[in-house]
Image (tube, rainbow, N blue to C red; front, side):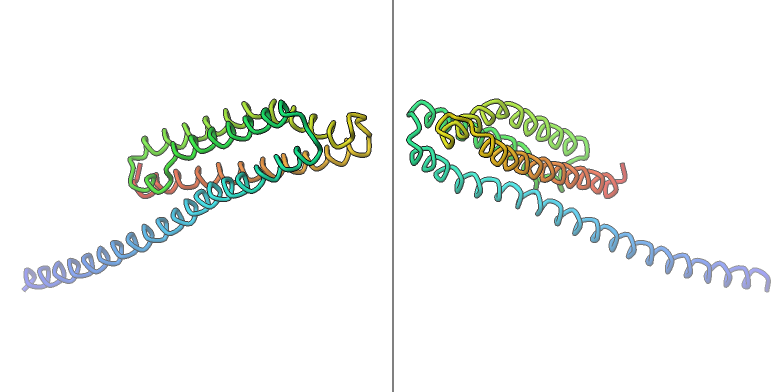
Length: 193
């Protein structure tokens, strides 16, 4: 009789264990789905950032050249501005092409980390490379607008505008890098590494 009771208790424990195991598997699937959904949102932000950068660049590019022509800038200034903008677009395009955000979800963690690190490095290099030409274009633009008198009112106005643009770009870049770090963290959670 004791053996049947033990057997019945064991059978009951086995059933409870199977139910608990099923619940844990369902919970793990739900957690994985939530993490994947969060990762997709973060990757979607990265892709929107990429698209917006190129939309803004393609809209501002002809506008800026038109403004330079309106102020009768020399062809050397226009050529320098044109070349600088084209180089910046190419450098940023190459950085985003290195990232390929949708592929991050399916990669091994070490490969995803390497790709994100390469992207960050290329993006930072592109930004630093373009810093000096951007400042030169800014100074040339102020010179053109003020007829090379560098009136303090114009200098302060355009300086504040430039500062606001730089702060906005730094904020967007930090948010981009933060989202990418979040994706890496979630890949790590999913893969259990």
